[in-house]
Length: 90
Image 1 (cartoon, helix red, strand yellow):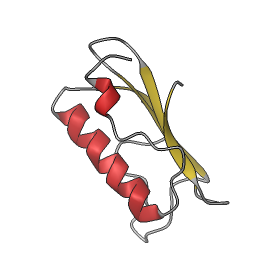
Image 2 (cartoon, rainbow, N blue to C red):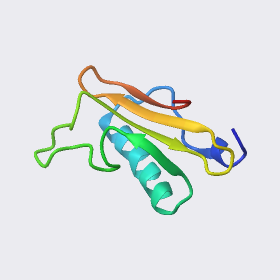
Image 3 (cartoon, one colour):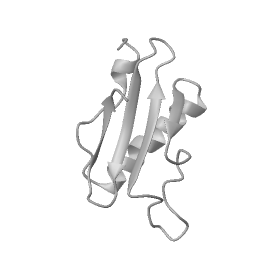
């Protein structure tokens, strides 16, 4: 991990849908500004809910990569059982 990506808002546990949505908004903004690379995800960034408000899946994840050092980070949530994390690694 480099000095730049060490500033990402990593968290061992995501407790609420609102906290998850704030992290995804931050990741989406960084991707749009080309400050981080989206490697893969279970859905497009910011499109984790259907129009009726329900989640698009029981598990939603996005893996990003620091363009400076190449480190991978994954944000994932279990919408069925609750909880999630934004952590270093894939």
